[in-house]
Image 1 (cartoon, one colour):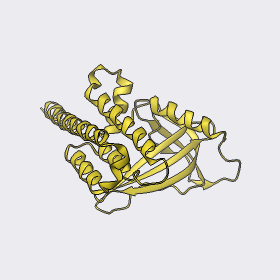
Image 2: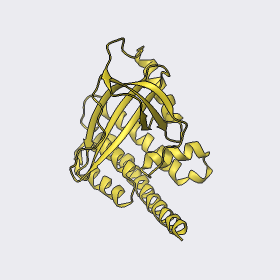
Image 3: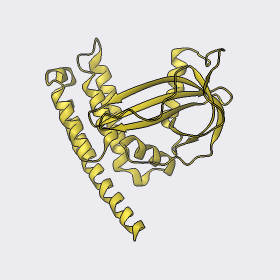
Image 4: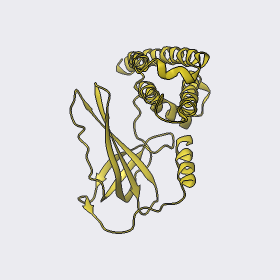
Length: 230
């Protein structure tokens, strides 16, 4: 009985997300018809209203992307091009959600994660000495999201940890930038960067040494794009 009820709840939420995706597609169409170059005249209120509609549709991932769109108009020279690029990516995500039944499972799992549905980590754990590269918080009034970026010194992998705090509370997970932690990370399905922090084998300690390998900006962007496509 519990399994059947959970399945029905998931189906109802999927329907609400689909309705939100269709509404968002219509708003993107209206935006393009009106011309991107005039998008800065509407102000941020329009974007926040659209984001609120996505929250109502239980698609927080779409809401977050809409808020990011709202920060682009008037952000500097060439902003209409950047807005078009981000609108295209959002359209791609909408289309993928509406046609998720035809996607291979790893890609479908990535789409579910991007729109904001809960997804559990389930890949094989990866033990490494993880260097904490960055940590920053974003807040939308209801939820504070903390992102922690890690780099595995032995595996060469980059990972993203997410932690959340509701009603103005600070997220529990915190790792100081610059420390290294001997721990296991369990990746999420879909081949992306997100992972869960598992068993820790030592206390995080600052370790002097060489930074993670760098390279040309083009190579870094290509690697990031490959991770997103995975």
